[in-house]
Length: 317
Image 1 (cartoon, rainbow, N blue to C red):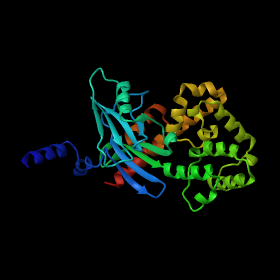
Image 2 (cartoon, one colour):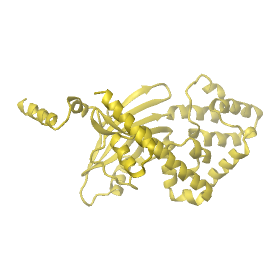
Image 3 (tube, rainbow, N blue to C red):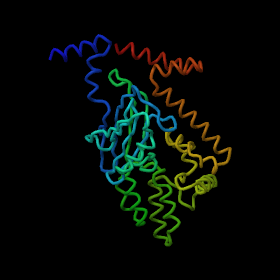
Image 4 (cartoon, one colour):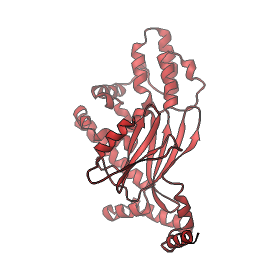
């Protein structure tokens, strides 16, 4: 007991609050924020102290176990790689001890044996938001994920069977990117007017354009996507309008993307990525990160945001 009190005193003496100490039990794990029949919302705060970049400069990567239906996130800390489950909050983290010979490729191989493979949110019908946050005094990465896979499967069944009644009672919105290509495939296969009528009802609910109503711009977007390899088969318009920073960055990071896009289209996406990165920093960046950025760019928007955060921190004291 005396030893515990001494440890507590040491942390308090060094500026750690009691809330920060208690918060250590709450970070590095996932929790279900909201759950419905078809969509689940998960949130996790991962401590970002000592995080090391390990794959193309990234400090985290998503892995998915199809058999266990488990989306997890991999990070590298000091002499460990750690895999945290997002979809199974009660599951213990998987820890891999490392030495100077261990690299990411080795860890990826070990994870593959456990049926975990690298993934992106677009591939498994989920959306993600990542930001720098202080959680009760602890520097963390905020990870928020919405799993739409059940809703996607419901729509796929309705489309595959040309049966709109299946989804008529569903009010939850499904992001278009998770169903667009699937819808187009079965629209091309439709052979009767009844099947087309059913698809029109489904399209209206998803706010998709059926073939008869597709505009020239949309056709161009679809053609661009169809020229790309399978993993890049989402419509170009998704990346210009709807993609998150992470999804757009993954898309542009592929060596094949530049091969299949014109210079104009590619440069347009690069500019949008920079805009999204800046917006993310301005909206969710920590005070320290914003100050560091302002020293470099002298942008008045950063100054205003810094002053706003400082004022808010002062009011909360």
